[in-house]
Length: 352
Image (cartoon, rainbow, N blue to C red):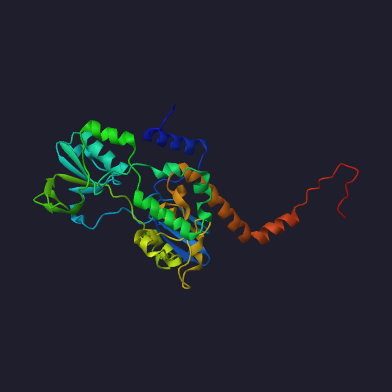
């Protein structure tokens, strides 16, 4: 009966959780870069603060493994006055009375088109290269606990082939979003791939695959995220040495997808793995629990339904590492433990 939780209530819940559990969170603490340092990781913050630690978890969400995907056919000089990505905060009030174009067919693209109309845009046109929107959300079919808890135990061929299957099908936008844009008069143009978007006399000029050209006042790019660890600034010192899927697995020719092969190939606890003999030993002390983990573990690191499973896998792995690394001290503590269990009984033997 509760159906789906509204976004703001979900955000309020997370804030409540932080307060009630007294979680030791620090806001506004941006990580600038990680460096290896004699068996530790040196974390340099934007504030100038330096933290030395044995483990770092990068739980940086969908965009944390390479950033926003900005297609090459869109001139970058359109930003920020004439174009912006859906993952960047857009001042929709400035779009009042404007003609808005949107590229993409996912929920972010459609919801941004709806937001533009709700803020008084004159029109919003969504351009989709597919002839039809995806029909079935296979992610819901993958709700079997095995996809969350057992995905990382499959062999590479099965994991990779299933990734290709999902990528080729894609997921439809939620039906609530579709009804929202329909109610607001958003126009969805199927089979209308954009070949070029450029600046023209203070406007955005779109050239479609059909050869048609149209002018708009603003362009919203809903093309998602990319995975490219060479573009993650905090990992610059490690990136050349991080193993990717393309380093560890060669798919059949018909399943080659360069973007999937660019995903990092992770260890069982989300650890980065070395690509070459020159990799810093500390590389496996970095745990990548963001969208970059999708190829190795499925959606548990970047989708809300499975994030609790990811946290359990991660903490179990770090516990194992910490136990192994600290075993001499832990054994000594056990040897020094001396609390008589039988004191006060007839079988108590005093220490001699």
